[in-house]
Length: 327
Image 1 (spheres, rainbow, N blue to C red):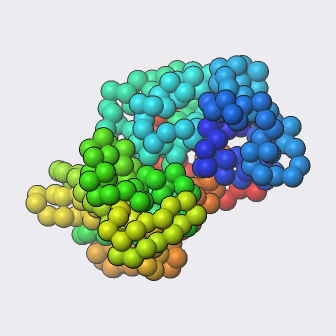
Image 2: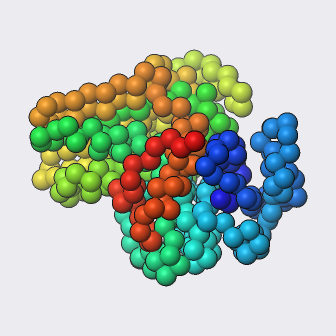
């Protein structure tokens, strides 16, 4: 397997892969020149050398290493990963990625998704997006729970995350330390806050046949009520502490799906909640919440064998056997 992209999630996934007896990590590729030419273990903070030297040329790595699969951890946006997906898929390399827009790739990018699907099928490769959010807590988990329901009328999900406990890029992404004016300006640019909420609603719709006629979301800042100090930022009262992101799926004017993410520094009582109004009604609460970074790395690696077993093409996690821990 090849690790492509060595940001925080990419490094975490690479470390998980190194610890698996059933997977051989053969190489790593990273665009940052400062990371190239170094032993992967050095970037991961491991004592023993891995023997894997970080490269900068993906095409050369594919040709010299002949990987069967790749973890592509470079961007949240499908247009930005498309070229690497094509390179890998055309070479017959299965791709598993936490790219949020790849969870339901044709939701926002139907033509691009069709092109990538064709490239993957021609190369005999499976390409799939997964993760914790989106990919598990607010979408796949309620889908699995619905299997115990005779009928489903409404789905509600809530994820509360104390961003102070998460990596620096995530704290930046939710706007920690910005003014409300700065947050609003960056939000208009389309890169502020959580990505993938609408994809989570779309996945629920497709899996359960909800017949939604609209999928929308709102994103607004959460302002700090007190001074909060993290490992990376100091957030003063009145500054942005993070985001509140709500995804809604409606049918005939009725809200059928309501997903809420509260991700800000200092968020009280972190947890994940899933509630299904149906027959029978179901409610699941994970106190403390699913640890996003650790769990995302695990899901990526654990999905690789499922992707290798699946048919070629640009798929969703609905097309794969459910991911499970591998040794």
